[in-house]
Length: 182
Image (cartoon, rainbow, N blue to C red; front, top):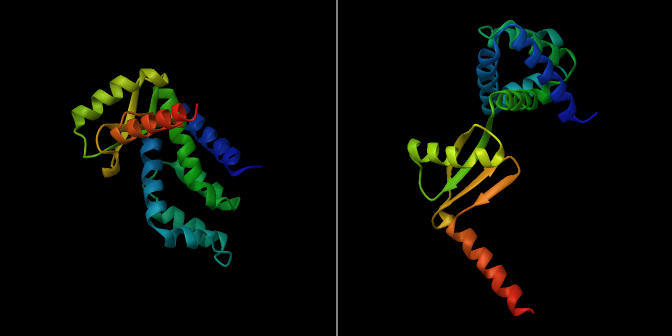
């Protein structure tokens, strides 16, 4: 079974559990924190995946490190450790966040621009493009890309909206070269 399918099952179970206990927002916040810790601390990953570290040591580390988390998140982490699924923790978090975003009508998106965009500009981009992808709003993450020359490039899932000058120049070049070949 693929890692993605397994991660989706754990995320779905945690989502249902959090929904039953009215803790969706809390669990989402805790999982985002967990992902940040997990991604920024390779020693933690190495420790949890090391074959010589006992199951009890791994569970103790998880319990002590994330003791402020809800019991739902803590039990899920311990279950993943029990089942030797430490490598899918980040995938489970991503799948849970996707479920939360779908429930809220929100999508995560990346916007590339020549300079850092203001909150007002990001808000306008969200308002403009969210309906185009069938969402109420977009959680935008801004990346500076000097190669764009101007304009923006927006990536929502596997869809890309390219309104950058460099993108327009590439399209013009393709049109001109295909017109010359005829």
